[in-house]
Structures are given as C-alpha cells and as structure tokens.
Image (cartoon, rainbow, N blue to C red; front, side, top):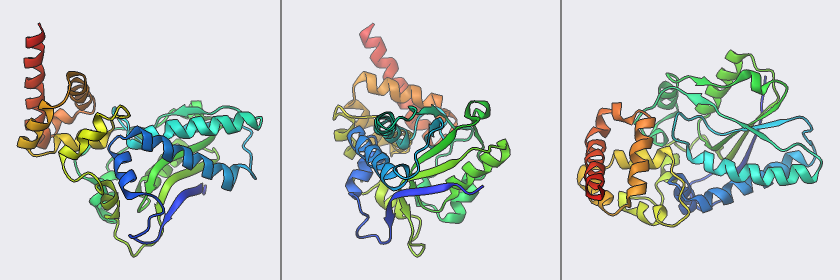
Length: 278
C-alpha cells in the first residue's frame, strides 16, 4: 500500500524555505494565529493540487500527528485545516470530515529536531501507535504533520497501518518537506528555534491572546535551566501555571529525572499561591 503524499512547501536549501522561518518557530511554540494560517494554506494547497481533480466522495477522516496527552503543534494547524476543507467539501457536495487520534505510548525528553535520521528512527522505533480500526473502516484517511524531514514518523504510521491491517486509501499531508537530502536533518531545529532563543522569548507568544499549548513548549519550559525557570514562572498567571503542571502530569513528565527540579518548583509555587488565595 503506497499512500499519496503531498507537501505544501519543498525545502531545497536553508536560505529560502518558501515560508517565514520566524513564523514556523512561533507556530512550534504555540502561536495559534500562525497555526491557523498554516492549516488554511495546507488545505488550500491540497484542494488545488489534488481534490479539484480527484473529489473524494466517501467519508474523510483527518488525523493529526500522534500524541499522548498534550497535543502537538500540528493539532492546532489541523483545526484550521479541517475548517477550510469542510467549507470546500460542503460547497462541492461532499461530506464534512471526521477526526480520529493516533495514541502514542512513550514520551521522551530528547529534542527530536536535532537528531540524525538514524537517531530519530532509533528513538521513535521504541514507540507504539494505536488507533480505532473499526471507526476507520471504509473511510479515506488524511494523516497530517507539520514537516517531513527523514520520514521516520511516516514509517511508524505505515507500520501501524500494516499491523492493524488497514485497507483504507491513505494520504500523508505535510506543511513542508525536506527534499534535499544533502541538508542535515537538524535543519528542523534551525526552524524550530529560529525565533525562540531563550525561555523569555516565549512571553509574547503566551500572552498574545492567541496561544495554544503543545508538547514542545511544555518540554522546553521543563528542560530550561532552573534559575531562568524560576524567574519565568513568577511572571505568569495562575491559570497558565496550573495548566502547565496538569499537562506535565498528564504526559508523565514527572517520571523524567531531568524535569524533576523545575516541576517540583512549579508544584511548590502553586501550593503557595493556593495558600495565599485561601
């Protein structure tokens, strides 16, 4: 089974990506305005280069990149993708899309974007993905991800597809794809951190009024040096800090030793704030 693959942007060099590197960095750290723009652009591209000539009449299921408890940045992009695609489908007599989730079982602290192709596969190869096979029966599946660098995530998805014996028509859709294999995979981290150089660069994104929390920003905060983390949380409101703590527990980050100091400080800080309020 060979899936149809589409990427809105093809990365051939590290000078001109075809999109703003600063915007991509903001997107990866939770800027929902950029996420909406990326999702809409991806839907428009998929419609123009595929659906206009190949209208899908059966039920479509859109599936964001795998996650455990905290969504990835792709999840926010997926929301805008679905909205734009639904409008087009309804206007052309199609069915509105359904959604499904790929569940993953392992969480890790390593920064995936900085790894080589072999290191990526060694890391993610220990993971396992799960999906509701019965719900998908007879439907066309659109798997969304923000960027394809080495294809390791795609191989894991297709491994899951094979293990579940899925016979669906499958489309792998990406906002961008690295097509020049002479470029090292760590170009992904060049994009991820193009704008965010320190924990304090997150302030404007978090307080913009258009913030959607994701795994990257939570891991980045918990992995920050202790002194910076302490200064940072003093500037945040209680709602954000409670969300940060609860999401961290939900993803079992309390079991990762390198996150322990920051997470315990956050816990103590919240207890002090609660005591003040009471």
